[in-house]
Length: 536
Image (cartoon, rainbow, N blue to C red):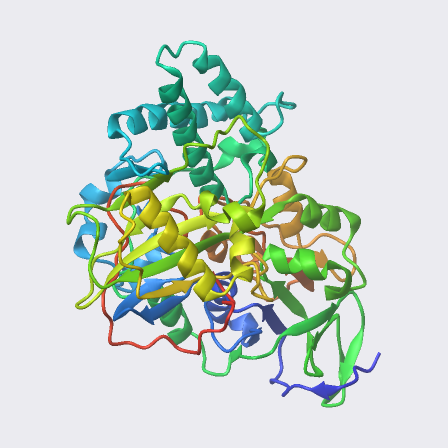
């Protein structure tokens, strides 16, 4: 079959390899392939004008803020992201210290510095600590179901609520205190939704929840931005590898394609782009976010993927977790404050009724992390997940700013609190090439579904290179997959879709108390910031 449309510039002899997606997984795949002499003809097709995907460091408020990935969770020798960052000299002395790498955090979000209730009073931090201890002890108990063939209840949320009801039988406080305890627990449920990238913990499967590996190390940041990791990987690639502004429309696979410049050669894969360009290839590695797969499953592959892969894509969960940055001329918080918790006293994890998003979307906001101050501004970073987060994306900046100003005035009990002077937010669900933030193992799916999605598709229908499951975090995908084993020059043609992130994601709130780093940097972030963002 002769491919139509415009032919992209054909490289020289040797197998042609395409990587679809220039996020960190795609860049990591390209970096490893470029090191092998058998794969000298490589192109990375990136839909946007920038590399990095859901790594996005923005120059705002006089410094650097992370619109996407924020922390390295578990920065220790077992973490490939930490290893790369250390290799490239991107981390501070404290993060690199052996002492920091040995700290065990358990992977749980640290306690707040202050907790505000919706009635405008401060919540006892002792009560917050008591509820956090209960909540995270129950989270830890979910590991007991790791190898269970069948669990009752099936979801993490239902399990947690069942256990909370049992504990409530022993509560002896007055009704108001019991109600406040439940409101604090509701906040912790919302925190876990941010951690897992889901709308509700009722959607997260219980049995595989304990698969996630928590590495030692106190969470750390990149002093000059996470983008530095992307830049260093990019610098290691040949200059002609990246092809920007090249969104892929359809991957035609398991065929026999020819091109005019190489009439005697056939290619098992033909990648068709939105602009009419075609790229024939022997091998293709697909690293696009699962949210994009879900949106374009019917048209992205021709012929359609095998049933087991289609079912895996449909069953694995994929949700949204966004950030909202608020800039203040003067801080209203204490100098040593690092984390502000917001507790809505009329909420409970045991109540399933949900108010209209228009009226209560902001109640899903878990609170704010205090970023280190800039020269002339002070910044809070809020996190919000789920349908409320997606609804927030549909609002104007003015509406979001107005709502959060009202929230802060209400919870602090100060109706005269000055409004933030500016705002920046992520919009990962609206981003056309992302369609969300990261994945989770949903009820009805398992870690095996991610493995099925990762298995290569050889053009002859026979076996090909195997992929190996690794975790945690989508950034670890740069270390996984067929790239582990195509070490010989004789490799079957394959089409690979790298699996999505497991939860415990690099953009979740930190497990430890240190606030995110926000340090002015003279290095500009490449590429304009789209609205919404294209990576996370």
